Length: 331
Image (cartoon, rainbow, N blue to C red; front, top):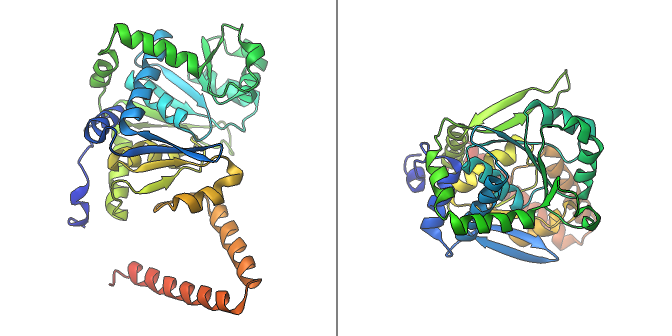
């Protein structure tokens, strides 16, 4: 185990934005941090790109008076903008709570109101419409930031709403006048600061909130890296909602800790195709995904020729043998 973990840095005294800053300095434009598939093409962000977007987003939040110690709600899909906005708020010393995009307006109003979030980052027009519906219950919310501008043309005169593109413009102008501001704010962060809040399902009553510090996330990440022997530049595909602990832990902790490449599928419907193109070395998701995939493979094999069936069953048998030996710590 000690031999396996030599390549893993001890970053438990770092904050998440601090880790990103170190990765940007270490890898710059040399290594890919994020891939996102859009219109059939994989778009790449290097570690330098990643940090620059976080800095501009953080500076934009500063223009909107997001303060250290405040909270920020996010209602977003798996995308680079999710990471940019979440780490940007952490850079300023704020705590984030991600909510499910499937939540109804009343549920969102309750969750946003209970943590007094002054700014809410949402994915698209659908989420904007939900919040407009309950605007009278969101008296503490000063601004809504929407990522996807599709269908938002008729909303442009509403001062409550700001596009993510405009937020970046605000941030870029702010950094031109205060170039060291975000770096100074990151330096103020401490590992014991609360980074994220996770809301429980609420199946037995009012949803509870669990709080996780930067150190919680980096410590969990380090344990994963050691146990699974994850190497730099391995691929991980982000599939579970940002409101779940899985993507919070892997998208923020593990990927930053080992410079793992984050991959975002184009849509939920293209996950299987995108999965094949990326060939991720690590994938964590709900059991339903594996069951559906196994069922699909077996149906296709049952309809194939004798040679493909023979090769499949030989490969499956070999795979089972390897897994059994690994579990028993045999060569």
